[in-house]
Structures are given as C-alpha cells and as structure tokens.
Amino acid sequence: MTTYFKDFDLTNFWDDSQYALKEYVDKTPSDADIAKIELELGYKLPASYLYLMKMHNGGIPVNTCFPTAEPTSWAEDHVAVTGIFNIGFEKAYSLGGNLGSRFMIEDWGYPDIGVYFADCPSAGHDMILLDYRKCGKNGEPEVVHVDQEDDYKITFLAKDFESFIKGLVHEESYDTSLLDYQDDLDMIQQAAFTPLLQSLCDAHQLHPNIANIIRKISLAILEEKNFFALHADPQSYLLYDLQFMLYTQQHNVVAMKDYLEIYPSIMSLEGDFSTGGYSPAFVQDWAKEKTKLQQVKQSKQGLRFTDEYLDSIHLALKPYQ
Image 1 (cartoon, helix red, strand yellow):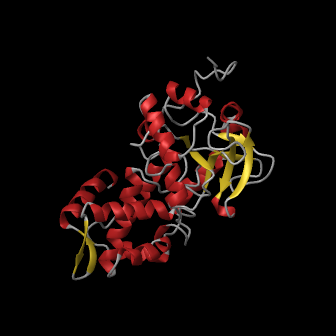
Image 2: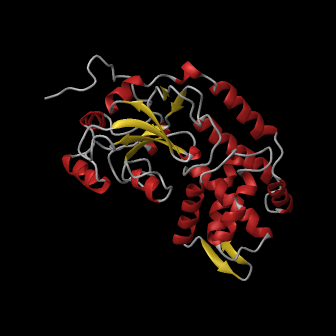
Image 3: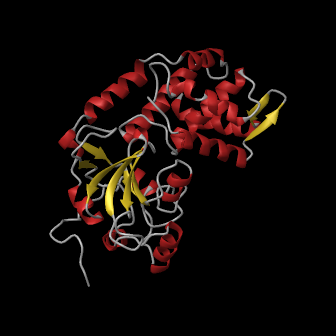
C-alpha cells in the first residue's frame, strides 16, 4: 500500500479554529461518500487527496500561501488559499456543497476541466483546481490557479496534489497581513459611508446608532477573518439583512433583481467604507434564502421583510448596540 506525505509532518498542518471546524471540516468520508462525490464531479480524486481527507476531512491549513513564478491577481509571487474543501455535500465549503466545485463551474463560469478543491481570499474570484486536461478523468491531475479576474487565466502551481500540499508556506513569508488588517480596521472605524448608505442611516429612526452598529458588525467580521469581506457567514448575512432593511424603508423594490443591481453602491464598490469588491453569488444566495424561507414578501410598498423577521433582526442587533 502506497503511503503519501513521506518525510512530511502533518501533525500541525491544520489550523482547527472555530471557523474552520464550522465551515470546512466534516466527518471522515466513507468509501461510499468518495464514490458518490467522484460520480457527481466526473473525476477520480487523487489518492493523495483521499489519504489526506481520511486523516482530516477538509479545513484551513496553517500554511496558506503557494509560490508562483508569475504574477496573479493576488500577488506578484504567490497565491493564497482560504481553505481546502472536504469530501462531502453538507457544508458549503465541501466538494459537493453549495459553494463547491460544480457550483463554481455552473454558476461562476469557471472552466469545466477538473475539480475546484480550494477557495481563495477573493471570495470566489480565484480558485485552486485539480487540472485533468493532460491526464484524463482517471489520471493524476496537476494543481493550477484559475483567475476569474483575468478571464480565467490558468497558472501552473504543482505537478500533483501532494506536491501542492508540501509546497504551501506560511503567510509570514509574504507578510502584509498586519498592514492589511490595520488598513481595514482604520477604514471600518473612520471611513465615510457611501452617499447611499449614509442617507439610509440618516433616515432610519428605530436605531439612531445604526451607523455604529454597522461598524461594530464589520469589526466583528474583521476580527474573525483578519480581512473585511462579506461571505456566507452569519455576521455577513446580518449585514446583508441590514442593507436590505434600510434600503426598502426608503425605496420601493418591485423585484429582488432590482435590489441586486443597486446593492454594489451601498457598501461594496463605492465610497471609502467598502469591502473593495464583492461576490455576486453570495448576495444572490442570501436573496434566494430570504425568499425561500418567506422572510421577504411583497407589500403595497414593494418587497419588504416580514414583521416577524424584522423582529429577529432587531434581536440580533442587540449585542452590537
């Protein structure tokens, strides 16, 4: 029986933070789980990937950077990994999850040439791929970086999955994280809101300190992730809720697609207080969930949160008041 990762210490490979355990890590996959995911993906997973997942099924590695010979949208000399997807279907960050490999292909337009097994800090705008173009669907795939921001440019990383894992290095090797964190902290604490968001806050009456509440929730996101971005976590969803609540208090929204068109001007792309970009898929998934759960309904004034759901939002805001 072949043993993988010889002369490589996996003891401290994973960073089992609360966020990692909640979002990425799942139970040990069975042979049936593996067969099911391979059937859905259409590719035979590398034996070294299976070996690692049977030891620890998905997660966030301690070393999150991989050197590159050419620039990418992330950096001049490396790419960064947020987490490695587990073999499963239940969690969002699993190969078969709602943010997994097929989702990135079908909803984001990534090339259908393999298995997207790791996400990056850009919230979907670049991914790490097991590339089967040379080896066929049952062979040993290379590992590449796919850059959605650059017309899905493909950058070679490693000859196989094991080499990729062994080649990961700590972010301190390229450390700008403290400066980036401080920049985000200064922005959250001091930067002016976009004109639209400021006008919505000024018009809101129930919570006179709504602007400070937004800053406090944003700060909690920064402290958890070490960067400010809205994804699919509860605090991000609370900010999505707040933005929609504030906007619909002042504007009629006939259809959710109309709100999604205006959304980037609230907090994502304009003004000093901004995430600096956004992932449309995350906001779209939020909107689908609100609609599916009937937390958003049509009224005479257009789409609105139900009174019951508004009560739950006000309750969720109490820790930030």
